[in-house]
Length: 265
Image 1 (cartoon, one colour):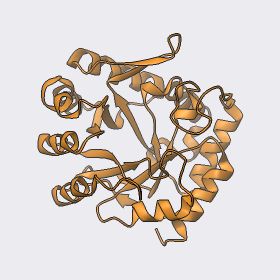
Image 2 (cartoon, helix red, strand yellow):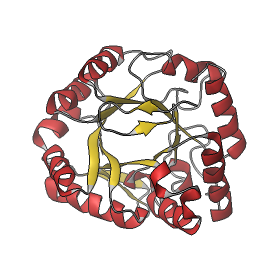
Image 3 (cartoon, rainbow, N blue to C red):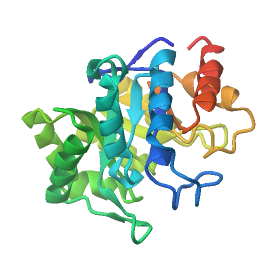
Image 4 (cartoon, helix red, strand yellow):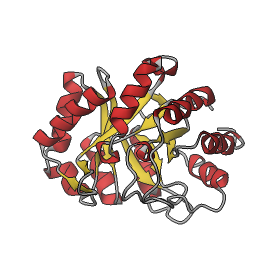
């Protein structure tokens, strides 16, 4: 796979990114079989990351809302020398949504103090000196989150402090993604698949502004009839930097990469 620029952030990412919700959380996961599956052990996760490195994937997507995902990434990557070195990976995490394992549910707090605490905790959990990309993890109040919550201002401050390279929004609405673009974010994450192309105007606006564009739910939360076709469809849209797909199965990861490379990406 040929790396693509993530807008003007200075980061380059693989066309396929690895989502990691299923290595840290097995309740309330919005995918087929999303409740009650066994979390993979450290050896399986290490093999997943090793496979990702072999296949040319360099983007890992995680979040505090993914349970123990950040901690496990930090521990397993550190124990294995980051499978080629920390510098070869782009780690995207989030802020604003917290998963309470005992309650089995998330809570959302986007205030500046909460976002600062989230950034500091992510740095510690991942065992890194700087976070490559932090997205505000929207609960649907996208425009308010960007314009009024204080979270965007705090991430700007984290960039100035050198704790974060770039920030953005994992959006649920076009209005929210547009607000993030207007606010000067470095990247946005939007839904795009054959059943939902509502983000196309945002994607074009991001491309015009030089903002990185990450796609989620390209496989329609696991319901795409032909995953390879779905991935190629999303990656063929001008402006898309990377499509993030979650898996805990190295064979599935190889299949997804095969679907991407058959399209010449």
